[in-house]
Image (cartoon, rainbow, N blue to C red; front, side, top):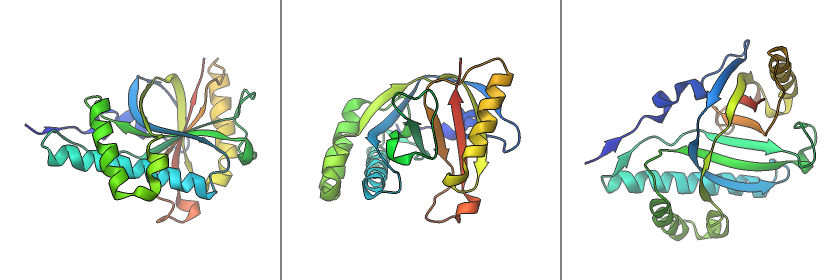
Amino acid sequence: MLTKIDLRSEFKTLFRASRKNPVLLEVPELQYLTLHGRGDPNGADFQLSVNALYSLAYTLRFRLKKRGELEYSVMPLEGLWWMPGHATFDPQRSDDWHWTLMILQPSEISGQQVADALAEACAKKPELETILRAVRLESFREGRCAQMLHVGSYATEGSTIEKLHHFIRAAGGRPTGNHHEIYLSDPRRSTPEKLKTILRQPYE
């Protein structure tokens, strides 16, 4: 029997944010398809990584629906960003960035189901096979976080990040962990000034 899952409804607080007022929230342990890399996101390698991750995510989703196992929507792309040796993330030093691309998955999905979808995706997109084989199904728990919405180009996120960090400190916390972005807009279809991105920051 086909099981239908609505991740957006189940985790709606994780995918909503205010442009004016940051909020505090607790992020539980969740399961993602992940892909790790480093360097400027404007480069060709980064875009190939995005394409590979989406390719596997959609192959998995359609495969499970066709087999009558699960039905769900592919969730937005997310990214963790950090700079080794630095306590906070500097948005001006893209060459030093390390990143993990992520797409949230239902907890019901198994490693074997991902492996089967991977074989299918590699057959469909042989030019992406090397990158596809680097994708992992991993669990990740952020715990206590603050988040807010940034509207505008990715290059102008600096002021929003400052507001988010100030909010955390004013609440008696300290930013820790990796800078987290959730991409609500497709940059291929939206002008830079209309891009919507949730910025999330773990704290202690």
